[in-house]
Length: 142
Image (tube, rainbow, N blue to C red; front, side):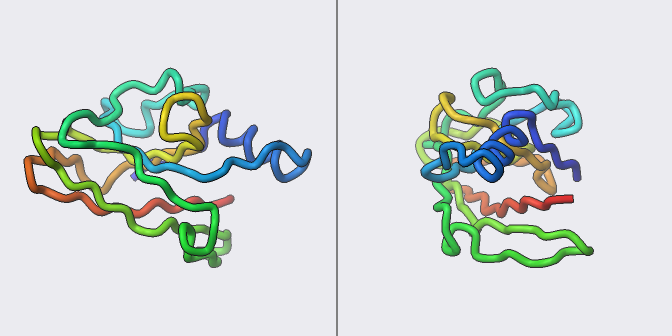
């Protein structure tokens, strides 16, 4: 399983934490299909240039609050701090959802924000009508 912190995400963290930059109102988790997974996503990829985001089946990015409810776990993991987002569930409705293999973290529900990070799902999924996909997202600083 691969993980990637994008340049936009690095800049966002440093700007907010060190320079008192604008804090995002919240975060959103999205699903995408990327050939070869996260390892093939360029670090310079932006939210506006991301391709392969899920379509169909009533898909939409899921809001994750900037709070202890949205990120209930913050703890040491193998010597480094990790925050875990609350589990999010996507339910396919209406038509089959496109195949997905990556979950990503962004600052907006559309493509105007920042692409923070992405991680491979444990397995690719093709959701059919009525299927659900529940996933969590962990962000670890190393």
